Length: 223
Image (cartoon, helix red, strand yellow):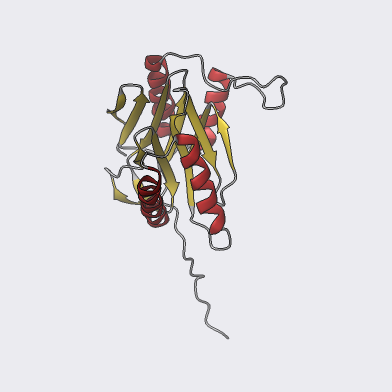
């Protein structure tokens, strides 16, 4: 009888949830700070949000080793862009770069699920949502990660994004004020934390508007 070995995988899923909401002149991006593997907690204070440019932030869940490799590659590509063009990359340009970067690795993908939030060239909020191999879409709001199946139906109910099939095309930005969007994100995570063991500890909220970037935190369940 041959000895059975457990199948080895190059990937892990470290859990966590990310949300982004675009408004008329702002973008709110949020993620919890728990990093897990299986039923073990690796960290209770791990930030899943990174600033890629002055008007662009990325929140990522999935395999955090792949996320870190992806973040370093994007930072290097952005630095090259700044040397060549003497300006920072816009959020739509960074959105396309992220898609290309993920698609390039499609045969051995980065196991990361990303939402990109920021301001476009007109100063309007924009959110891009991705799968692991670079398929992306500009939306008014999105969620990725272990709690996304709990949060997306709630956001659909509250924000009712217009169908992309409607003609003429409808604007995807949400009608909420900045303060209302922050409150909605807090409500999302407070409820998701009750049902998802991988979403917990602390909520990090990054608000991006014409005045720049500011962060705020909210305590979540710790069990």
